[in-house]
Each structure stands twice: as C-alpha cells, then as structure tokens.
Length: 294
Image 1 (cartoon, one colour):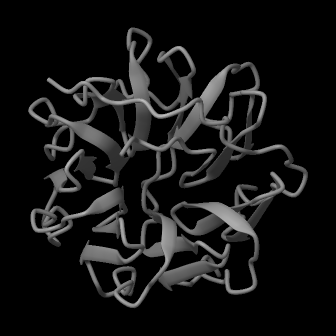
Image 2 (cartoon, rainbow, N blue to C red):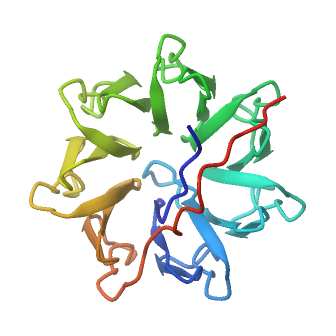
C-alpha cells in the first residue's frame, strides 16, 4: 500500500487542481499568494492548507510535489510552513493550517510549521504510507494498515489507535476519518456537526474531511457527504462519474473522470469558480513501488 497523490485540494478560501501535464490551476483569494502556482511544472500532487472558517482565519498556503521528489510551496509562511526548498525524496505531501508534512520514501515523515499543539511531533513515525493534516492535528497510515495521530486531542480527534486495515486517512478541524480496505469508513472526534456519521457508508474508494463535513466517493462514481451543510457543501447527491473529491472549510470539489471539476458550497472568495478547468487528473501510474522503511 502506497501513498496516493492528489489532483485536487481545497483550502479555506481557495481551490487547487493538478493538470495532466504537471501544471497547476488555482482559484480563490490570492491575498496570501496561495494561488500563485501559474509557473509550477512537473507537479504530481497538490495540497492546500485548510482552516475552519472564523473571523480570525483565512490565510493559507499551497504545496506541490514534483516528480523528482522535491516540493514547492507558496502562500502564507508565518510559521515557516512553506520552508520546504531543501526537501528531497518525498513521495507524498499534506498541508494543514500553518504546517506542511512530507512523506519520505523510507516511510519517515518531515514537518515544518506550527507545532504548538504537537501537530509536528512526527519524528518517531515509521513505515508510513499516507498522511493528512487537520487544523491542529496530524494523522497518518502505516504500512500494516494501522493509524497514528498527534496534536490537539480535545475532541478525541487523535483517538485512532484501534483502527486497522486502513487504506487512507483524512483530518479535519476537530474530527478524523479513515477509509478501510473493505470500503467502509470510520471516524472519531467532534460529532455535533454530523461529520463523523459515516458508519453506514459502503464501497468507498476515497474520502476527505473538511472543517465540519466529510465527503466520500464510491466505486460507482457517486459521492456521499455528511456534516454541516450551511453553505451547501454537502449537496453532492446528483454528482456522477466522480473519481476524487476534496473538502475545504465550507466548500467541496469533485473531479470527473473526464478531467473537469464540479463544486458546491461557499464561493465568497471565488473558490468555486472552476467551470473552465479541464485536464485535471493524476499522473499515470508507473508501476508499484515499495517503501524500504528503516
């Protein structure tokens, strides 16, 4: 099991897409330079720093993983979350509020940015194959299908120690969701908004956690959603032929198999203006690679 690259990313006020040729598209609030990706090339995966919607939040950053294992970053860098220029041998990236994580080929993890709540305490992690960043916590999947999490745990969003047979994990504001190899979802953390109500989901192939909502894609290309729907971010019931999703703070993106993107939710900063996007997709797989973890 290997970390899967992402062709879509949704932040607090912007959206990012990776095109077939390795270039990157972005829309939304460019005030913090998070949308300045027009010169990026040879990118195989993207990530966007996300944070819950509040009067004192909004600035974010964007991260891109290149095919040679180096990393690009642009946007808000108040805590050094964009200081990734020296990273090499990276196989996957994750971006949260004020931090960035990078997965090395040997299964270890690099972190830069804010660590006040312990969200960057990943130095001891080994044999990792997938990573995710929430607002104040980080989560990951190990090669044996178990999960690790570190950071703020006040709503038990880091209580993943009993999870097994995971394929991926996603961290939101105060909750964490995991996708099992059998297509079922698990969740822990704040339940007031309903973002953890995924127990009945089946045949899921990918999922993502927003601030207060969770979205998932089924093998048939349908999309499931649970949680806060104040801005219509969960109105995905009529989406079809979807192969990937990304959940922002209050909006949701869906990637169609034909490379176009659909969206729903808060568009106050133009983060949903993706109607002109085309050719958004993951790079073709070059064959299985194994992580030689130490």
